[in-house]
Image 1 (spheres, rainbow, N blue to C red):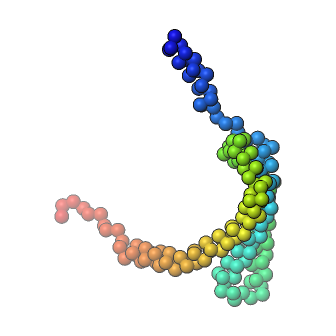
Image 2 (image 1 turned 30 degrees about the vertical axis):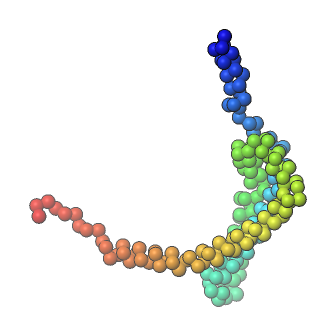
Length: 175
């Protein structure tokens, strides 16, 4: 009798322990993407990338571009941004976001995120995140700029070592 009760207990309890939470619904993910202003953040990223690209081009040429060169750089920048906005538009990315969020989060998790992001603290995170990202990107750019001379030195040393140490000729037996 005890064995039968134990088996019954396991049979009843196993779906509870092994149950996978319901995946997030399309409607809840769409609501989350809206409340987190994902589309607006994407537009801000485009603007930041455009600014960073223009800055990096000026730095690459040492700020000494002729009018013709500047016009070419401007045209290239415009074309590159147009391509990026076309290939990474919200219409292209939204289905990807939907799929990723639905695979990654349960319905309960999305509901909890929605509850948080609808609070004043959640809205503060959403509204300040672009600024946080901008500051982070600037700080990373500065760090990479400071790191570049050391990386270039390592590359130069490696190339020098490669030229100084050619492979030893294959030895032939008998010596």
